[in-house]
Length: 212
Image (cartoon, rainbow, N blue to C red):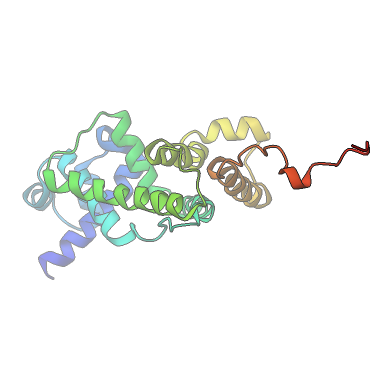
């Protein structure tokens, strides 16, 4: 059994553990048991739990970061696809939520650059859409991306609010309806403004019936 196999099992076990319990609630002995590894190997490979979380997030992005990526002129499809993705695999979002709530900062420059590049690609897609005329060019791409992500993420970040609003656990029909709804909201948000129509050209003005 190679060290690569061991690291792969540790990554999978740590991903599940952090997504469920966060860093403060995660237990290295539980990760070791589920990974069929020993605690010493985890500390040797990754150091502290915070460093392990950083590695888990980076590893997830390397393997899944392109699963749902915005393309120019298709930001509404991106929002719908992201909602659909989180329905089936919310682990990355949960990791980010724990990271934010527990105030865990990224430690290595490499991790910061990797995460920054991940979001830079999204901003590039917005700018390309603006240049193509399908997104309002007056919208700041950074603010717009936060709004689009927020529309999707809120549903999964506070599911108790969703249950209150819908009167219980949403079924497949409600989930499908909401997927369509966020896509429509995105289309309305990003739509270029239609300039007000000015006066008609002289030749289109109605002619006076009076004689000269």
